Each structure stands twice: as structure tokens, then as C-alpha cells.
Image (cartoon, rainbow, N blue to C red):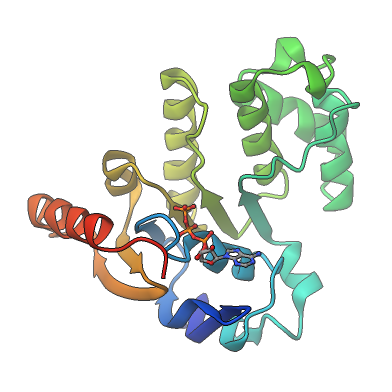
Length: 239
Ligand SMILES: Nc1ncnc2c1ncn2[C@@H]1O[C@H](COP(=O)(O)OP(=O)(O)OP(=O)(O)O)[C@@H](O)[C@H]1O
């Protein structure tokens, strides 16, 4: 079976600072990579490149064998992103936001899809409230619903548990597990070892812009991994 996502020798420089240094890995459909690493390691930069928000300085990203740089629009249609930016419109209601994105992604029956997702993240009773009035956790729930609107083939999650209560966090874990079972590919950046290891098929550590560790989750020695992670976090801050 061919790989779904191929990242090869990816580099990103910001004004002389090398944020990513020759990062290479591949993921198949149904793979779930949990990516750990200290602050400033380059994790968000990697996700931003994969989300086509930032161009790499050099290197290649291929999705289903197609170069990302050549077909960004096609690729975006099958992408879901949860990042630090919520990408929500404050002056619109929760329902209006989701219907807007459902239309943007040319989803069948946008209203129905929006309602379904609002149920899923337990915001249906608040569907007519303006998002500007939402709490942080409610916004995060809606961001999750937004990211799922097109049933993405690749889901990119940057610290998705931020602001979520226990209940919402377990709802998200459930969704992620379902997506994985449906052979969607997920990359999740997190500082939570527990959450990251729970859902992963692969675990990686990015430090100083380099992928210093990448292993299958199965058979992973949790204790040894926790120690390695701690070492990296203590040893390395921003490059
Ligand atoms: N737009 C930018 N312009 C200049 N430098 C940037 C920019 N974005 C990120 N950087 C730098 O690139 C490096 C990697 O940043 P990045 O946000 O990718 O790290 P991270 O691993 O996601 O960190 P955190 O865990 O703190 O979110 C840092 O040194 C950061 O200062």
C-alpha cells in the first residue's frame, strides 16, 4: 500500500532562524502521529506547512503522491485543521459558522451537517448564540466541529485540548479514535503525554527543528519514552 503522506527533507527558515531542519517521515491512511517536543521546537511550523498556510524553504510534501505545492487547493478540500486560530466568525452564530464552512467545502446538505456536528460537540442548544459570546472551551468545541465539517482525510491538530473540560476532551478523543478507525490520517501536536499516547499509532519528538524520534506506538516502552521526552524538553528550548 502506498503512503498517504510523505514529508521529505523539509526545512523552514525564518529570517536566519532554522525552525525545521530536514524533517522526513511518511504516514499511511489510518495512521495517527502524536508529535511532542519542547516550546519552539518547530511543531506548529510543521503543521502550518502541512496546512498550506506557510511555504517551506525547501523539501517536499506529497499527499497521495501529489506534490502539495502544486495542488494546494485540491488538498485543502480534504484537510481539517485545529490550531491556535479558531477561524470562527464572532458576529455569526455557531450554526451560521458551520453552515458557512460546510458550503465552502461543498458538503452535501450543509444545514443538516452543521446541526449534526453541533450535536456531536454538545453545542446544539446554543446554536443560535453569537460566537463572540462563547467561552473559550465553547469556541474550542466549535473549532473542532468546524475542522470535521468536510470529513477530512487528513486532520491536523495543534494542542486541541486547550480549554476543553474533561467531558469535551473525552468527546474529542472519541471522535479521533473513530476517525482513525475510518482510516483518516491524523497528526496531533500535544504537550500531554497521556492524551498523545492514548490515540497514537506513531509517536514522534521534534526538538530544535529536527525529528529526533519516531516510533510505532505499539510495543513502545511508556516509561522510557516519558524519560526521553523529559530529557528533550529540559534540554532544548527554541533553537
Ligand atoms: N512567523 C514567524 N516568524 C519568525 N519566527 C517564527 C515564526 N513562527 C515561528 N517562528 C520561530 O520558529 C521556531 C519554531 O516555532 P513553532 O511555533 O513552530 O514552535 P512549537 O514547537 O510549535 O512551539 P510551542 O510548543 O511553544 O507551541 C521558534 O523559534 C519561533 O520563534
